[in-house]
Length: 217
Ligand SMILES: *Cc1c(COP(=O)(O)O)cnc(C)c1O
Image (cartoon, rainbow, N blue to C red; front, side):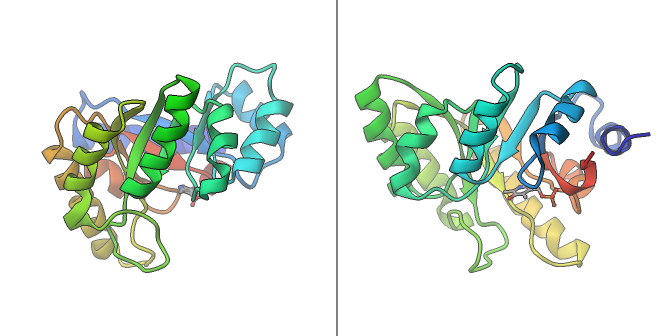
């Protein structure tokens, strides 16, 4: 069984334990992979891939143009990279981390007359090293983006679980994010869960997983 198949089997088990009607999508995080490894996973049926650096997304996007892949952007965004990122037309940007960044996107999108699907990143573990809005401000920022940024199609939230082995601490960051997600009007995507914590994320309602190392081909 490939890494992808064994992870999908575990996802399915966790999904059924949570809610048999839950639909879960998987982004294969390809940031450490060569294009040949992406092609290998594509041949196994994987369609959506995620990168965390604009330049890497650009390079792999170009090299794999012949493949009908769906690209996600999951990393930190410097304002001077916004135009380059928009030009790549990623399927979804998971990492809008502030109202200021959203407004910078809005300005450029409006100028180009295009829209972009995005998620608001929440710093649910409140670790200094992590990007994202503070949980207590998340709803207000979410609503402000909806109000002020009509070219951003805001579809939900993303978080990175707490950086610890302690499952109960990781669970808290996911619970916190699910609570915020449930309070938002018309949010449909809850992006959380990586190689070490995706089953816990599913138990807390995640419907978009970002998994890299566990499925390395
Ligand atoms: C690298 C990365 C992942 C995947 O991490 P793995 O532990 O390799 O599964 C998920 N989300 C983000 C934002 C990442 O940077």
